[in-house]
Image (cartoon, rainbow, N blue to C red; front, side):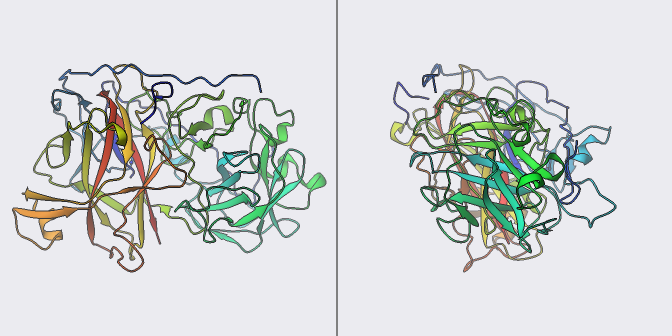
Length: 506
């Protein structure tokens, strides 16, 4: 738990909303892998939120997600029991209640992996910088750059010149090369790390070679410097706007080739476990913005200031906003977003989303586990519809009410949980999947908050939770299901939301 000075979705969603859902949709600009784009002085401030229990019992409408996978009802978590859930008539997809998201203008289609096609080159997916940092608790060289294939097709690297694509800093020096013939899977990642001091090599989402990334470098990227991805590694005049895929840099970066828009806010850096993460929900990681996520792939409006948000494991203010979260570097061997092919349902569909056993409130106070006001357990059944065995299953938090939540909003801390046996389930589908008749008892598997980095204050934005029983030796077969619980510590009660992406291998 944070000290008093530092208190600081599918996808599945627990989007708890007292406001009308937002209907806007971010249209995303994409480029073909070959059709390139042409065209220290601030002190650390730690804010303590007001710990005022919200005992209201206000009816609100059920939630939904943009991909039709629901985890819980919009509601208020308080110290007087669960709130009522209002009635509504949402769309039904596969027995899961959802609302439609998007708009009728067609802009929704632009953000679902479509790409611009250059008639002179083969079809290929777009690559963007999805997460990075340029220092860390191990010093100036504790840094990485994560590349994401923002399309529905695998991308095979084929540079216009040289031996691959270059990840370069604004000094014009190549830090990493993505070699020719490298295949970056659809929705997959490539990880470039500084081998001198990279401290996140044991993160379960890291690349296949622990501690090294998919490519390495040993020259520091200066604080607040720009970074760009180019279609070649020849350098010189080949590093141009016409040959650039993507760029990110701070407002203080003078070279516009190495940033987009105004750049992210300039940081005053010190030894913190931080990262800049590309928005995957559409709310800019605003803790108090409720409603559904409005995008289903990472936001790319060509403005770093709005496309990325800042997280760290202490909820620190370093000049670029403040929210509890964690770095989560991903590489070629990491699980891939599978929102569209792994279905989700209530553990017991004969009971409301806010009722037991789908949602269970425990008032036991355990401050040492970031659960001063008890816990909230959310239970769901996930179905493997990928067409193959799943050997790894996890969930990444992309929207959350957490520190520093103001009064009236819950401060949720995702945490590791154990399996629990749940009896009295009357859902015939859940019971059949468990090989039983109704009513039945099933084992609901816990999830593990993935580290490194250490997250002593609990999980937050960009944290990931794994289903540890799904492994290479014990895969989740195609068509099979798994019952899972998400355990959230409560450091403050009030209106809450949580939205996660499903990630899986293969």
